Length: 352
Ligand SMILES: Cc1cc2nc3c(=O)[nH]c(=O)nc-3n(C[C@H](O)[C@H](O)[C@H](O)COP(=O)(O)O)c2cc1C
Image 1 (cartoon, rainbow, N blue to C red):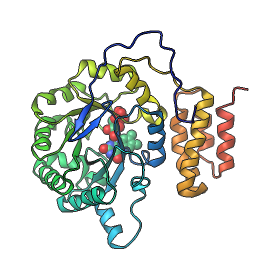
Image 2 (image 1 turned 180 degrees about the horizontal axis):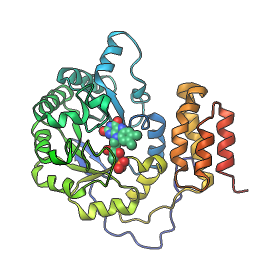
Image 3 (image 1 turned 60 degrees about the vertical axis):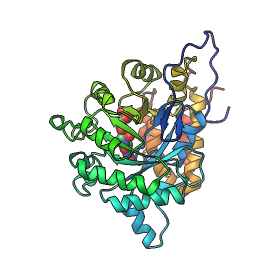
Image 4 (image 1 turned 90 degrees about the horizontal axis):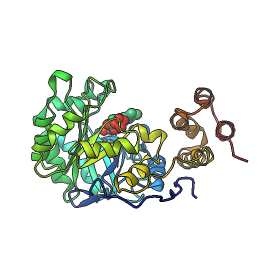
């Protein structure tokens, strides 16, 4: 077993009917229709590689990449953003998410991603609620209040990237009393996007409350051509199954839960295919996984930066485990490979 695989469950039941069919983003078949969400600061190459090795995610996404920043680096002959680490060479399919508010800049970067990086999908962020993106850069979820500009962005990016599909990721609206996801969905489809992902909260909600899947479902009848992907609060194979059973979505996207369970896609994929769900890895397997993840990050960033970067992943992996608080406290101050190994050995013990 490599560090990132799940053992096959003993099949004590015959496979039942699959719950969900593959979805198509333009010509791209997404099978199973379970997508790994873009997450800034987390879904870098190392993390994606781990998700990929466990399997079960039909499409993986990068962190969001700022289009203006990309162009600036380019014009100043600097290296392309760290957030594009791995993108040129890693397996496909892969979506790269971009954000900004200037249609020609986004179109230019979309084109570069298609031509130079050969990405499978260019996704545009219309959901980020962070002040720096909304208030300062009038981008992300701020654009939900500007449907005209959203349309112009999508049209220009679609034209620049063709035939590579372009998708959009939104929230329900800016605030609870300004929910406009149905109107926005029609703008997204009418402007030529190939899929729509909806996180069932408003920007003002940030991550408070529960994702409103009824609101996501209301959008479905208004989309004539493109798939609807629902997102929010899916943290188990059962919840993924339940989402497909209860709501008219073509696909689902998982974000936070996969940070401490990158094997969740494999479990959810088995569930929707009507197969037995593989068990969680053992503590020992998780230890191997953490060390493998650290190795991948070290190879790119060197040990010092990797130690800092690994703090947040290690905390995610530890979530909900006995001793998690103590583990987090120790991981927060690691500075070297040796520190990291020592802490992992202590909290993820070997069985013999
Ligand atoms: C740490 C973090 C970073 C995120 N970064 C992005 C991002 O770069 N682009 C984006 O569209 N959404 C981003 N999101 C939102 C997620 O993709 C997702 O829509 C949201 O977390 C809801 O899904 P969940 O309940 O499965 O976590 C981020 C979320 C988190 C927790």
